[in-house]
Every structure is written in C-alpha cells, then in structure tokens.
Image 1 (cartoon, rainbow, N blue to C red):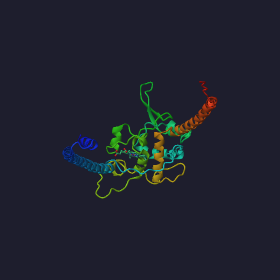
Image 2: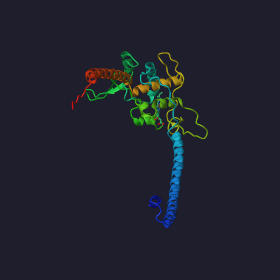
Image 3: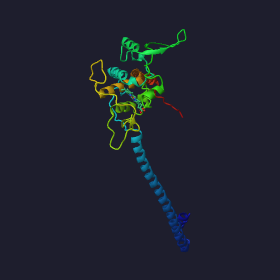
Image 4: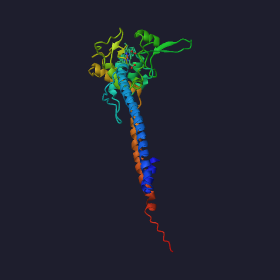
Length: 309
Ligand code: HEC
C-alpha cells in the first residue's frame, strides 16, 4: 500500500509537497518494521535449519556406528563370474560348491527347497545324481499297514534335513538355529558377497571385545558374534576335479552353488531375455520398414487445393 501510494505520488506529480513528506517517512517506518520482523523470522528459521542439520549429522553418525556394530561390516563386492546380463553360472563351480555343501555345511544346514533332480544336467549326470540321492535315507509312508518306513533317496526327494526339528538343531548348536540355505543368498542383503565374507571373515576379536563361550568373532555377522564356528579350512574338502581346495576356493564355490540354488533358472531366463531382446529389435525394424513401405504412396503425394475464385 505504502509503495503504491509513493508510486502514485511520484507518477502523478506532486499534489503538494506535504503529502510526499508525510508519506515517505511512514513508508520507511513500515519497511523497517517489516524488515525487522523478517529478520527475526529469518533468524529463527536459520536456527531451526541449523538445529535440524546438527541433529541430522549427529543422528547420522549414531546410525552409521550402529550400522557397523549392529548390522555387521559391509562386505566388499566380489567379481562373480555369473553377474552380468549375458553371463551364465560356472557349472564346475556349482559342482564343487555342492561337494562343499555336502561334505561340510549339510552337517548343520538344511536346503529344503532344493531337490536332487535339479542337479541333473546342471552339475551331475542323471546317474551321478541318482547315486548321490541313494546314499541318503528318507522317511516315507505310511505303507499298507499304516507304518512309516525308510527308503533310499530318489531323484524327486529334497536334500535331507540334518536335524529332526528346530529344537534338535538348536540343542546341537548352543541354542542358535542354522538357517535353511536354499534361498540364503537372496534372504540377506548383498547375499553372495555377505556369505563369502562371512565364511572367510573369522578372526581374533579385537582388544576390548569379549566373546561369550560358544560364540565366535566375525565382523560381518550382525552383532559380531556368531554361533557357527569357522568351518572352511584349507584341504577340508575333497574335490573330484582335482582343484586345490583352499578355504577361499571352497567359499567361492559354495557361494556359487548357493546362488544357483536361489535362482536355478537364471541361465535359461537370461537366454530367454536375450532372445526376446533380439526378436523385439528385429520386429521393430521390420515394423518401421513395413510402415514406411505401406505409407510411401500416401506420404509422397502432394495434394494441391486449386481454389478457383
Ligand atoms: C557346526 C554346524 C555348522 C556348520 C557345519 C555350518 N554352519 Fe552355518 N550356521 C550354523 C549356525 C548354528 C548358524 C546360526 C548362527 C547364529 O545365529 O549365531 C549358522 C549360520 C549360517 C549363516 C547365516 C548367517 C546369517 O546371516 O543369519 C550362513 C549363511 C551359513 N551359516 C552358511 C554356512 C555354510 C555355507 C556352511 C558350509 C560351508 C555352513 N554354514 C556350515 C552352524 C553351522
């Protein structure tokens, strides 16, 4: 209002000098007042923002330190040979990884979603897989007399459970439950790198950290103390292809096997995906060509409106 009055006064010429003299100080005063108010509110806004930033930084640092101790050290990213749009699993690594699982991990961990038949054509021939399944015992039944009975495993059976139930598993492992490994690389954040880092990450606890009896220090496990002992040691597994079985080789192979168990159809899906991309590109090209061909007679016409008068 004030500036409007001033503008009018300036534009319209001076109706009387007293008017301008009167209006200018009034305007200046109100501007000052407004400025003061603005400064005050700006200051409070700034303080609030600063407080927010400080609180955010403090909070973030608290969260960051909580993440490392509580959620475990973040693993590095390893260059898995099956990562990448056109990469397939290393099937000899799956085979060796299954040997690691069977000779080591299967003593404690089940794989309830993986069946012997799935290994056929992936890392074993049908006869090999049948022979492996036949070495296991499966409770089946009831038979004609209503009794449960045991028989040798067949291709359609899942991998056997190391324990009868969760209570038995906990009882043998100091109260901790060894989780099912079928889907573990998908069930944990950054699963493959995490499992590799976990298996190879055992070390002496740093000074000042006490680990309770029956637990083992592993910085990659949330909380840092895990009930699973260090189980992969050099030459702890016998590979049937003669690969030197050092601990990190075993870890890499078993993670490849677990990654395959989580996504058993990944190789096929990638081939399908590439085929679909190729076909889509081909059909798009054909559609463009065909559209231009069909429309060429229309597009190359020139319609002239010869308007007489
Ligand atoms: C002696 C028994 C035993 C053997 C052998 C064993 N584990 Fe474990 N594992 C455990 C127990 C117990 C836990 C649960 C640990 C806990 O909760 O503190 C566990 C947990 C895990 C976890 C899950 C960690 C998490 O984030 O919850 C993974 C992954 C794992 N084991 C992988 C393996 C692999 C791979 C092998 C074989 C190379 C293996 N384990 C062999 C007992 C075993």
